[in-house]
Length: 464
Ligand code: BES
Ligand code: ZN
Ligand code: ZN
Image 1 (cartoon, rainbow, N blue to C red):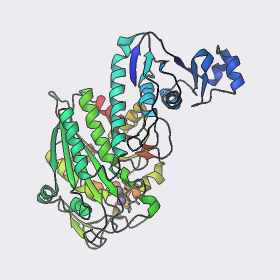
Image 2: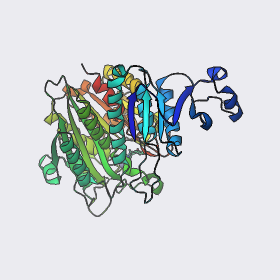
Image 3: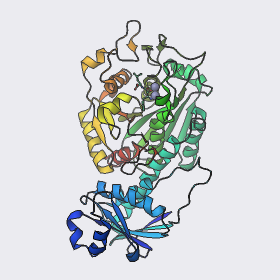
Image 4: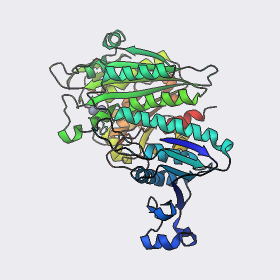
């Protein structure tokens, strides 16, 4: 499918937006009335005789355009139209590109006979190409990086395991001229990463720490991105119930998101140095598995009592965050993780939970979320919740002693591994709800959503 920016529309089908308040003035009102179409947000109506697809929007906000174009593109892809044109402007071009690429996204790698679409050409029609060209090109890069993240999240745990995750990263590094370092279990043991190593011990796959770096000349800032890459989370000996285990291939979504971010920044050619660290591990059961009651020694020397082997993400991130801070003196340190079911309880499944000490940094991300169409909400730390991580035998327990505030206590656990000088540079993103969906919403379809890629790309674009 080819998307181009043009001043002339010459296509089989034209897409038009309409609000309910304008319906009566619309040239096709009489025909539309017969169909019962009332221009409700996300509703669409084909007027085949006029070669039109009419799309209902609540108002002209970009978010509404993204959402309805996502519905429209699915319908067009299953029709027989070969080319379509859509009018765009400065305000909505990014959202429309996202609606087309992400709303029209399909993952067919495991289908033996996927349906083929006839749609070949999408023309985005504007009056001044030069004015929109950059926004158009950037939107394509970011949407495609998001789709790349989805592709990896959607891979099965058999196909995407820690070593094959490392191979994918190597491939991206080669294609996009990034530096690449991979640490296997021997190297992790040398680094004394006892916490991360324990989680992967019962897996038949070697755990991997994947480090990629994008280093342009004249970089204005240095950013470290850390991702939880649990290629499968069975829960370990604190085994998950059968129903909760389904979809746990998505526990690598934080790692997939940071890989997608590397693709985006290197293709946008941003003037920022970006490092990515993924802790790629599989949490399994077996005679060799780590156990509730074990005490682990993490890379920074803190000891951790394991009270639940299903709270494994924080054990991996503890060591990877410590390693990342030793390797790179960054201006910002962000981690992305499908860390807690509690985050979904707190903010719903559409929203990413943001935690950290810097209100300023959190505010920057509210702005980037608004610009990019992702949803974020801040979950506040406090000293009372911090006490719930005390252990009777070690420095720290991997599970809170009380059942409430689980997303925040997980964030506070990670805070133990953030060096004093980096406290205000760090943010933790819990994407447990936002990274994966089994029901479509906005421009998200079944499977991985690519959560994190758009919001971080917007933040990085804004660095001066
Ligand atoms: N990977 C899960 C969190 C998760 C749950 C992500 C549902 C996406 C959807 C994580 O490793 C986990 O199991 N967390 C436990 C923590 C608890 C044992 C303290 C949880 O959320 O129940
Ligand atoms: Zn778990
Ligand atoms: Zn997990």
